[in-house]
Length: 110
Image (cartoon, rainbow, N blue to C red):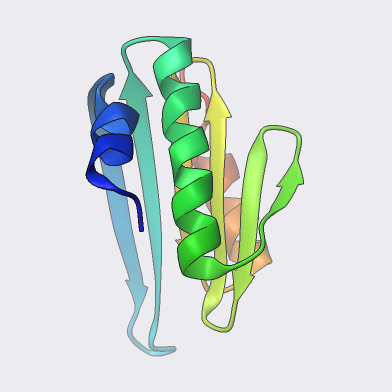
């Protein structure tokens, strides 16, 4: 969804990450939480900008609220937020679970 140069530029300042993949077997649902730290605030924003291009190509039109980008799809919700030198990516089956995961993440971490 991005050309090679854009992708390389977008991840150049990556400084580490933590993720959780959560499943509910009885409902057959999954959620992903990915917290990424960047070398600088600028690197985090560069990644967010590239992710927006990726997201619009993959998921369609984006809704922006503050620093968060949100896509609603037939399989759920995708959120990318940027704070300080960090980004938070959540994929969840619905907005309620996405909000709970965001709150539980403590984003942005200090």
